[in-house]
Length: 407
Image (cartoon, rainbow, N blue to C red):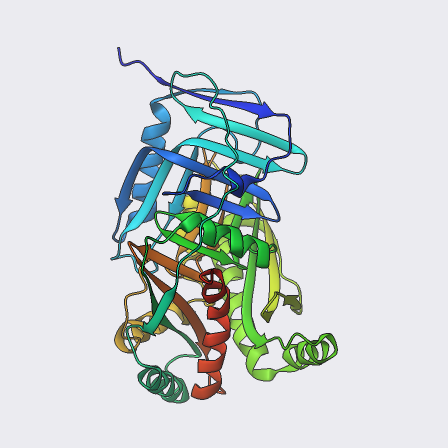
């Protein structure tokens, strides 16, 4: 008889600075306003790819759960064993699944720790010391700025032929350091400067996303849609005027409507009821403002259990990172974008043993490989787009990562 692996979850009394607990290598993170989950150590990991990657991810996770003997005195979403996930944008690229050895969680006044193995409760050490990120040299990524603007112009031309309503084009930059890149330092700076975003890290992919693709908890699902962006000036009076202009912009409202419709249609088959607000609100971040809509729904009570994997398969890719109609937009991206997104713009976050979870879209992000980090941004192209303005918008979206790399 095969012996099961103990997994233990217990409460921790004090409020914890989650990111301060992380080690300096291979951290796992999903933290917003000091709440969320962090993890380290690897109990098990796998990569999946292909048409059935969400089903394969679910099967692997369920197989792992069958090997556990779970003792959970806390209960609730994010307690017990947790799977950190980072899916690629394109199904033909590798997605990464990681079960940490140790997970520490915090929600409101409640903190807990989960660990895998027949050992005593791990001692948490505050690793408040940070290390300089080093001096970075920036260089163009897969395309030059001029070449990228040509791709934007090509997308506008195809939209003009009524082939598609919206196409999201991404671009990248490469930053090279003289020393090994320290992900923990980047995470802390992102969390400090952008506390209202979800600061994430999975297998070298780090970032701070404002876009929640999916929250599933006890049969209730939420998805925050962002589409339509304007840069902030830092002058409160001017920024209020800019926010008002964003809320009236026909180009941005059109882009936003496509994205909201994409999410609502993806969730509808799984829900007995959905709520889609009639108009978006303006989400203020440190460097930009976005049109935002929170789409919510109550899952239908069916014989077949719907979990985060089911919803991810339907939701990804949304119009916010792909376009409308999705299939045509994806083909155009594949044809003209000229770069491999990897796990940029894919779902990233965590899923627990009950199938609940929180996953965002991996935006405002960078992929660390040794002494190099590749940072990304994308723009929604519609009929009224202008290549120069889209380049400016992409540069504004790269500011969080560029700033986090500064010593």
